Image 1: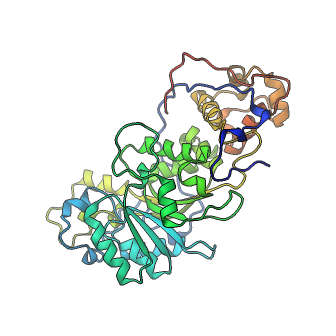
Image 2: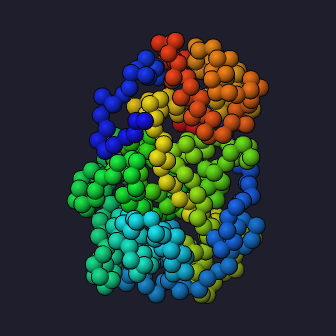
Image 3: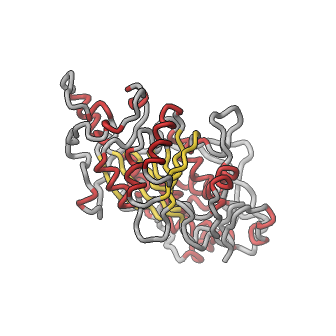
Length: 401
């Protein structure tokens, strides 16, 4: 079984897929926005679901804010502002799994940072706002020096696009400076990342994360780095959707779940991240529209642990983009039959593919689980009777869905 290691090179491409050609991306329709009910979530992890209005909390965490930081600094981004939420996140992350190294994204006032340090974690804080750096550094000295603070933006590490991006940090140089050791893909987790996923350019950031893990680049050069990120409620439901949630099930659902073990750890109302809703005195009563919008803005802590068996002799960091394209193509007509899609995906006989997969000829795309899509890809890649495994069109537009 082939598995990626740090510093992969093109020579790792296997002869089994040397003849595979590249697909191009097809245009996709808009995703459905229907919400799905959470299932299997412990009651203790449900602070407030979308059917219940969030309870406004007092300004308990704001007493620790760094002096001189204007209010606009906090209102422009989301931060963990509730000490009780910070303690919950620290408890969820620091379980007995042998990894206490935490990379925290944009800690801001450091309320979660303090909880992590007090729980025994070693924390690397990547803060993109210079205004918080002195406060975080003093916090590290106060709590025993287990905090390393750097001025950089985690979501701008190793950019895939060209142009000037500030602050600029290369993950290889960063990890070398911090002395983070590489673990092979089959071993444990080298570090855990925690933070809030940005709403700005959200889709681009999602695709960057997926490209990074499937290509085994950026932070994934160092092993199966675990992500613990707060996403909005709807995006979280889409990430975990399957044929049992057809209205939320799309290509991204498949790509997330094939790459990661996706777990919902906690659901928290917007009030725990929004400074305006933590104020003791409300200057003006909230309008009905504003209140309803806030109710819908729960954030969900999603744990993304890369699968040990993500890569195989057929699906590798070299040909993963073909898997991306195949999955997107299938979901263009998500209610269509798989056998009808196969004629436009591959020159291999469709019935032969279904037979190898042990699938019924009437199965629909919407009825296939993420593991079925990986099986489909590997079945086509395994074919020894065809030099070219995939059909493609060089003139079709490359579009991100």
